[in-house]
Amino acid sequence: MWGVPLFFLLFGVLILVSPYISARTALKTNAAFQSPISGSADVDHFVYHSEIAHVDMPGAEMHRAAVRPEFVLLYPAAGQAFVVARHFFTSDESWAEFCRIVVANVRQVPQRWSFLRITLIWLAIIVAVFIVWELMNRQ
Image 1 (cartoon, rainbow, N blue to C red):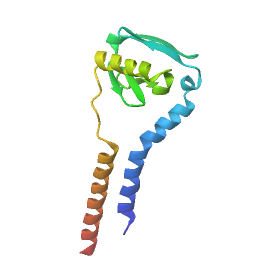
Image 2 (image 1 turned 180 degrees about the vertical axis):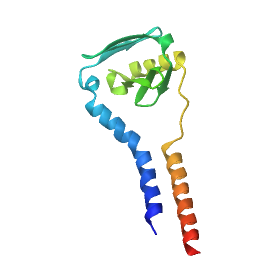
Image 3 (image 1 turned 180 degrees about the horizontal axis):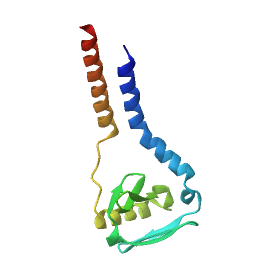
Image 4 (image 1 turned 60 degrees about the vertical axis):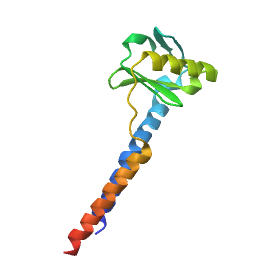
């Protein structure tokens, strides 16, 4: 009786939580994030140095960017991104300047739906499935 609604509830929770678990695992296991990182950015270039990689990407070749309060994702191609975290910067002024450069020179990824909105949609789907399930079982 409760099997199908419970399945959809657990499936919805899994879909909501899995990106966070994947990102957390990637940060813990990615060797590039474990080594010291340095770099610079200006209107013309994004430069990234680590023990594993050296990237000197012209700013004009960046596919897209997503600027968030604690990090910036720079996409040189679809499905590939450089994570630039706020804590990489020595001051808030340098972080703000970097964000201004990215916003002014790289096409932005459109804002996606908020976590709360997605959660409410999944909750509505789960409730609707539960109601339909109950109505079908009464007859």
